[in-house]
Image (cartoon, rainbow, N blue to C red; front, side, top):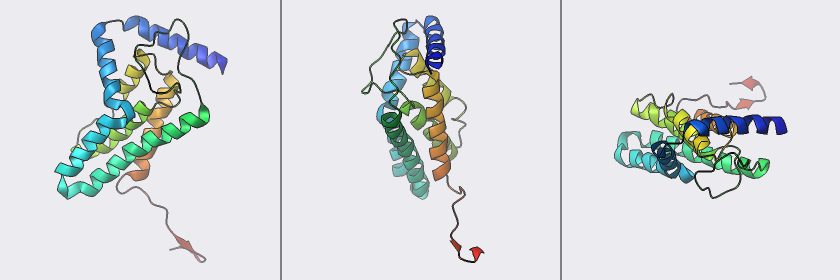
Length: 178
């Protein structure tokens, strides 16, 4: 595990050495504030639910997916207890309410939102939005790359479970499948 932490720290140092501009760091911090506690994504989902009366059920499901992804990462952080990057060569460029980093809640809620809201809005959000949020977490020195990767996978799983038309388990009787 120590060699993985060293390798990931080296990635962070390399990325941070190339992202020193105030605009880049400021933009990353703004994305972080938007994603704190999934609040920005919750606001968008709530607006969709309020404004798109014909698809309220879909917006509610999408919103639950975002909240579920965030909640799952909160639980996983407390189980895994991986601390945020702390090597002297890594510059922490923002604050965070927790010292735990694995997995990234920002990456999870952003991925779930991009998938679910992208479907509802018929916009290809997933290819662009989660990577930008994920990189912003690295630029700020708050996460390791694997934190972001597993966070995004958590968002994908949350979306998959709650996606309209997703395969649902079937009830079987003693005689087999119905």
